[in-house]
Length: 191
Image (cartoon, rainbow, N blue to C red; front, side):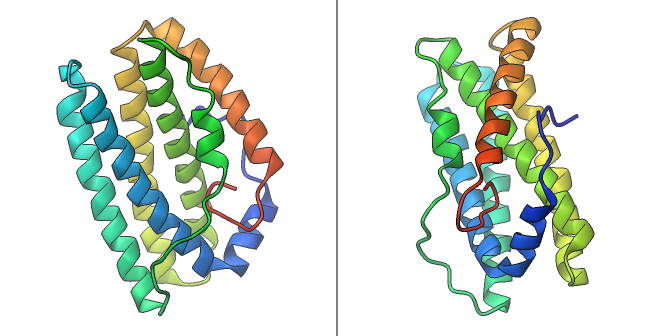
């Protein structure tokens, strides 16, 4: 369903729970960046009317999630501030091909994979976080991330053929799995 080429190692969950405030702060940054990515698509592709309404709604939802995570940070006494970003998204974006429609397809598929990895990790947090409130919180966000993943795939299929999209998705998923396997220090949502 999520089109990932690998699953998260158990060591990630151990590290994430051991430094959960860092994960929560990173989560806030990820939601903010996801909203920005959606808005950037709207501005870069005004000539693609099929993108406009669904991506605008996606941006709105990502900003709502950002606000929810900010509230969780506040309840834990963690200030929102700068954080050294993970190399994950940057390395994925470096795989984007030049020229249209390949560039748009890749941007949509990379966004789908980022949402899929978030979905997988939210499911882990929903199942294993020691606090019931966070288990419920991540269970709710898990469903949204799955929906976002599906939307990005659907939009990519509006740009290219299903066969081309699926072939490119498989390649990008293998690349994403390699990036995830290399890990990142310190722990991040996508490290």
